[in-house]
View: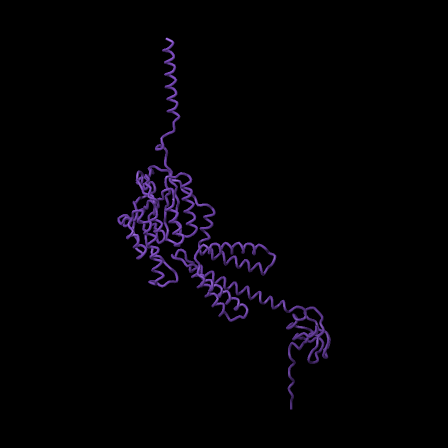
Amino acid sequence: MLQRLCRFLIGTALVSAAMLAAGSAPAPASAQQPVVDKFILDSTIQPVSAGELKRAIAVASKDGAQALLIQMDTPGGLVDSMRSMVKAILASRVPVIIYVSPSGARAGSAGFFILESADIAAMAPGTEAGASHVVFEGMKPGSVEVQKLQNDAAAFLRSYVTRRGRNAKAAEKAVRSSHSYTAEEALKDNLIDLIANNDQQLLNDLDGRQITRFDGSKMTLHLAGASIHVLRTSLRDELLGWLVNPNIALLLLVAGALLIYLEFNAPGSIVPGALGTLLVLLGIFGLNLLPIRFTAVLLLLAGLGFLVLEAKFGAHGALATAGILCLTFGTLTLVAAPIPQMDVSPLVAIAVSLGFGLITVFLLRLVIRAQRRKARIGADAMVGSRATAMEALAPEGHVLVEGEIWQAVAAQPVAAGADLRVVGVDQMILQVEPAQPPESIESHD
């Protein structure tokens, strides 16, 4: 009886322990909802956007996301920034999905290179990709230098398109002949992996798909019902994205220069000088992120020189016109942009050049006149002033000039109370003459 009771108690304890262990065991990994980080690339390709993409890849790798989804809509941009972004995608530890979306978006020029570098390339209906003929400013079409650079760009594209298992010949057509593809054409020519209407459909279609990473390793995607976490742009990136706009950078530079000039003409005010210095530094920082033509900088310096000469010599506007034209052509050609979206707007260039030119000439003339007046102080400032004879000058006496009594000498006798004009100064003695020359007396026969 005692043995049966012991067996019962031991059995009950074992069953209870098994039930507790089963209840405390973690849920299977398949029951957890997958997470996909999403980065929106809807600007030009330049150093700021390249930095944003690299940080997005780093965040996705750190927080354990199943994949990084890049929603792209770009006209293209700088070659160096594009190469940097492609290298970051190829080296990413987390799978990168690039999705050209929404409808009407494009992956143009440098954007096409980035699209083809992704583990998964996808497009929404009504989008386009391609037109990646590399633009080289200052080189003649068909020259040996252009051919070398185009061959280099085509080889760079082939180096990873082939490894991704996509159509290298069709991709190279976008570089050499600026060919552009619709979503359907890109899918047919094996330039992308699929077409999807939205993010969720894209992730559902990719669920269970096996991909080959750039390093040759195999990986199966589990993305059905994934939660999409949109990566927000930091304040720093927003500020840099604002500064990299050439129009904004140019306006900051010009406004800062005028404020600094104002500080020089009103020393001690402090605020214009401090604010102007800040604006100039921000403008230079923004332009430093863009490719700048040195010939355009020379035009800007020549324009400033013409404005200074106009203010000093007063060439009836000829030098000012030449200066404003130099400023206009300089600002229009300042940025060696591969795409129109990165050029200085003609309206901004004309407005800035005309406004800055006229304001500069006006202010410089005021300064030059003030400097000339400063050289005439004391008795020298009396030259040209009206005077009144306090007594008869024969030829010396005293005169009243602007409320002050001065000793004066006249070339001819002057009666007391006569109106005089100061014509010179000699050792603190004024030289005067009648304000109205006496009428000649005609002789009569």
